[in-house]
Structures are given as structure tokens and as C-alpha cells.
Image (cartoon, rainbow over all chains, first blue to last red; front, side, top):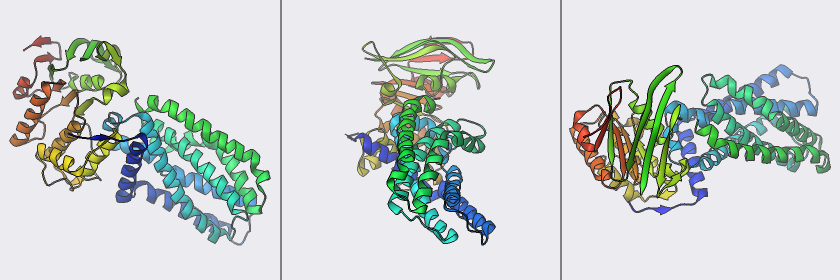
Length: 227
Length: 211
């Protein structure tokens, strides 16, 4: 059959497009992630009542909701492949780096959608918005990249396990601890209207975390994926 | 010249040995039928050869002009059709074929996809969702996915399972055509499939013999 070759980016995009199409038709991860976020935000808002939490507490609550909502859906990228029996043919169809970055980009898109849903709801429920939006968005973007990279390799690991659901959160929490601490700190500063000089240390930590986790994940992925 | 060497291959699941000490070599243009009773390890042997399973002992090596190929080099030239492999049920047949071509680094046009589907007897079904396919149609689609690669190594587990007489004829023609230029290994207990291979490897204690 006459064919022309395509470059690495097109191959990665093929994985993203396939996962987006599948997600759009089944709403497998999207519904779980968004419903978890909405329910949790509503519950926290109702339980707080008329009490007005401090800005650092609100920043922590934002990331607690975000983290657990993400945990409810991000593992699906690999769990679905294993459970549907499509993993073996995918292993024989492409290199590990293409699969990893395709799945990571899909998770990043899912997290971005989650952020778009959570942020307005958070502003409405808690009547608070970041006083410094650029700073908030820089912190959010750095955290999302690290979150997508880390959870993609962890999802690949737990997809081989029998007890998948609980294991994903249990493994992710310690691995993501530095990321969450830095993200909470940046969000807290953005809520009180601080400047960039106040977030330099946590931002450096976040960027370093992103680089180290994604590099390690790429190096380990072939071994994990071919198990 | 592409060559497959299987040396003293063995696989255990826990304490149970599925098989031990299997050795054979195949070159392009040679084919092998693996037979044996249920549980004798036919599918396990095929999975070990493809690299989807890790052997407990022995080695599987693909070489070209005496240079060893790593997994990423030989997987590009290898295609497998097996009942335990699934395709994406929420995608159409055409979307599946386009995905498997692109993710492997090739771009296919719509008329190539239509021609490929016609070759396996699925003309006019390109835009049907795979979830709506019967088991026989799914088996035909798996052959279309395998043929996308124009493979130098074709591995087929139960080649004619779920197929009607017309489907069996198509599949046997595909395998016969591939045998001339590729390494072909089939796992089967159907005597009608034996002529598709030059040699037969009987698992379950009967050894290997030429046919």
C-alpha cells in the first residue's frame, strides 16, 4: 500500500486525537472528573456556611479539590487500554515516547478543562478571586504540566495492578507532594495580591519538579509500558 | 535477510511450566504452524515471539544480516492477529486504521483504507463503529490493521476463528501471499490451516517436524 511517513509530532497528535475522540463519545474520564469537582466544591461551600476562611486556607481548598478531582479521572488513559485489551496492539504500533507524550498531552487537556470548570465555580462559591491573575495562571500552568507528567507515568504503572483505583491516589500523593506544596503557596500569594518576587522559590521548585518528573518518566516509560 | 532465532525458550507462570527448551529458526519466506492441545502454550509462544511477554528462560532474537534488532526495530516490521487483541470499539473501522497507521509513522489516504477493507471483505463498512461489528467482521478488521504495516513478520493466532467460509478463504489467501516474502507463524488446530506453513511445531511433547 502506498504510504507517506509522518513526523513524531503527528504520531503524538494521533494518540491525543484518538483519546479525545474516544473521550468525547464515551465521557469516561470527563464526567468523573467534573462531577467530583462540582460535588466537592458544593459540599465544602455548604459546610463552611457563613464562615469566611483565610486566603491561604482557600488556596489549600482549591488544590485539595483539584487534586482529588484529577485523581478520579487521570488514570483512565492507561487503565482503559488495559481493560479494553487494546494495550498489546498499541505496544506493537508505536514507540514508547510517542505513547507517553500522547497520553500526557491528553491528561494536560483534561486538566485544563477541569481548571476551566473549577475556577469560575470556586469564585462563585467562595466569593473570592485571585488578586493577581498572571501570577495565579503561571502557578496553575506549571502545576498542571507537572501533574500531567507525573500522573501519566503513575497511571501506566497502576494499570498493571489488580487494585487500580485506590493505588493511583496512594502512589500519586507522595510523588506529587512537592508540587502541591509549591502550587498552594503560589495560589495563596496570588489570592492576597502579592508580587512575582514572593513566588520565586516555589515557582523554581515547580519548574524543577516538572523537568525532573517528565525526564524520569520518559526514561522509565518503555520499561513500565512493556511489562 | 531477516531471521528469527528462538533458542531454548521456556515460559513458567508461577510454579507451572507451560513449555521448556523450544528452539527453531525461520528466515524470510519460511513459515511455521504451531499446533497442540488447549493449554499447551501456543498463544504464549506467539506472545513471547512478539515481545508482549518476557520469557522465563531462553531467548528470541530477530536479526538482519547478522545484526540484532531491538524491540523498536522489529515491532515496526511485525504484525499480529489474535483473538485476545482488541481494537477501539468507540472508533469506526476507518478511524482505527487511520490511527494505527499514523501512530506507526505512516499517513494513509481514505481510498487506501477503502481498498484495504475491500481486500478483507469489509467494503462499505469503513464508517461503521467497531462496537457494531460481529466477531467475524472484527477478525477481518484485525487482518486489515496487520496489512497496514506490510509486515515482514506476520504472526497469527487462530487464523480462521469466527470466520465464515468466505472469510476463511480471504484469510488463507492473505497468509499464502505473505508467506513468499515474510516470516509467517500461525497457531492453529485446524488441519485445513496446516498447508499454510512449511513446518509444524507440535507443542505438548511431540517436538517439531518438517511437513
